[in-house]
Image 1 (tube, rainbow, N blue to C red):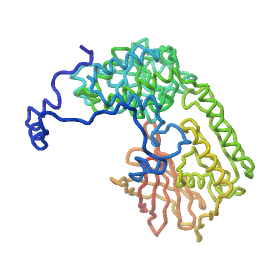
Image 2: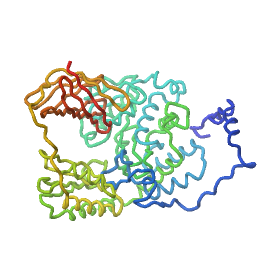
Image 3: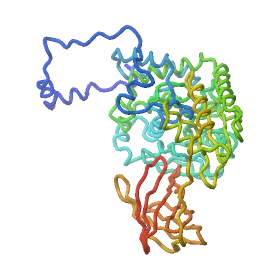
Image 4: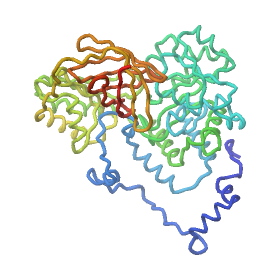
Length: 534
């Protein structure tokens, strides 16, 4: 029997016991003695779409030529043909999920040089499941009361390693303990410590609390160490396991070009089993973190291919694409290009092209060019986009060839050349006139989100047209910087939240004892606000 085998009780059995199942089948009876399903195709999946007419355009969504990289918000990477084929073939069979995960994990572990492995629904899920595996193991009572009761209820994170993805640790509700030195780490490790989390990157090798140092200290009390290597190349031998890490996790939808909704968790057999035991299909804390057979087999195909791919040839191809784009842009006044070659960081390893110019000489800023590329056909996303008229005309964009498909580099080169050589006309934004409004003092602020209302307070100082001050949120605080032109106001802040930051960019108009307008918060969307003098 598989170590992950479940009880015979199932959702179907529950529905049948309760009478719901029989009622459902009575509504839609089967024709004849058995259901007849259409025969599965013996051929692989075939795309019938075109750039102008495909599954996405048919629902009103415009696909993207990706010159930005492996960002989840733009759907990650393009999965390999072998991955697509594996997912298609997997979809035509039923399997017992515990048996499948055990077999898939065994082969992935062999390829990646680890004791054991499981497939997760992304690297963030691997973080979450490893945390719970270290918190409650395979004790069903502890799993069933998650996140309300824990024996080991703390996770230690070096302060430099705080990041937005440690939300995966926080999902199950442990207390986060930050440390900044080896002595502090030793002092704060205790019987309450479930795990230590570190995000990999150049600093994790150079900081006094490096991965190797943390692992050595953690070993003194047998505390597991998790290394988040999401976007890294999975080297063999695994450098993090060699440094003493307990767990290492990778994203499936980045350099390995597996399914976007997949990741790999590497670690010791008992803890990997505990991580999967706490996830779907089991009725434990991580039931929501479901991995389908298609994602599991697609991830296995991606891992197999990673160790067969010619990575040097890929790097050369990306460099050739950068050079083609740079050559296409030669002769544009003030424009310069620079290719940043590979550094020591194992994440997002590809030569990136930086393009800079003076918008006063070319006629279009970086932000205006980004908007043109977004609105064009085909739609193109690039990195960065700096430049603003009339006061910041030094402009730039970047090209990341990592996820471009063959032929995309020509599309990108032609579009950039067209817009930079024939930019059209752009007017400077209108400048408000009149005396500057006086805004020093305390303001009570109501922010109306698409769902919900937030209350903040601004304490502003003013020197001429320059504004500064404090933004006091309901939970977090930030510093404000901005300016006032006549009755128009702009204020910006970066609110530090656990592991991340929320940008606030307020633009509004003053009217007596109030000013109001719009606020943009980057990935957190937009809202409106009203500030009233206290």
